[in-house]
Length: 184
Image (spheres, rainbow, N blue to C red):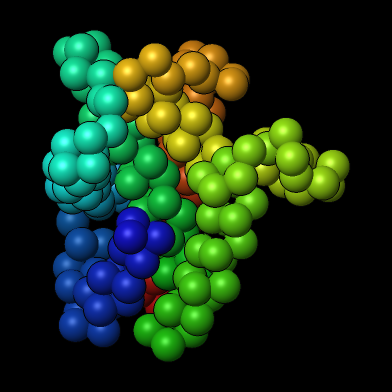
């Protein structure tokens, strides 16, 4: 749900809060990274719900502390990534209606063009390329590996974490540069 986080920025702009943020000496990247971290912390509640559902469904979950810490980090990174992406869109789109339309248009293709539902091995060649460029693929791979008992990573946890961190950092930087545009 972090992909819809940018709607709050549009609301803040409409209420005049963004002008107050921009009047402070706070670096713009700090504002964006704070919003991304807030979205990441909200994402932890969704992760907790997944663990509770897994218990009810008798899914074999890996309860090792390092795996749990890895899940927490990946969930925060994933939510921060998509919240930052959403914030970048909100900085360019000026109305709530357009934002929601664009967010809807982006959400489903990103979801289906990842390894969330289908293994990449059975995808057509062109979709494999798209899926490997989709950060959601690496988040799903890392979460499956860390959450499931005996989970195996297709790309390696180092690559999963690296891609998530690099894309999140790039989107926070981009969001920091675009953030002043939201006020206009």
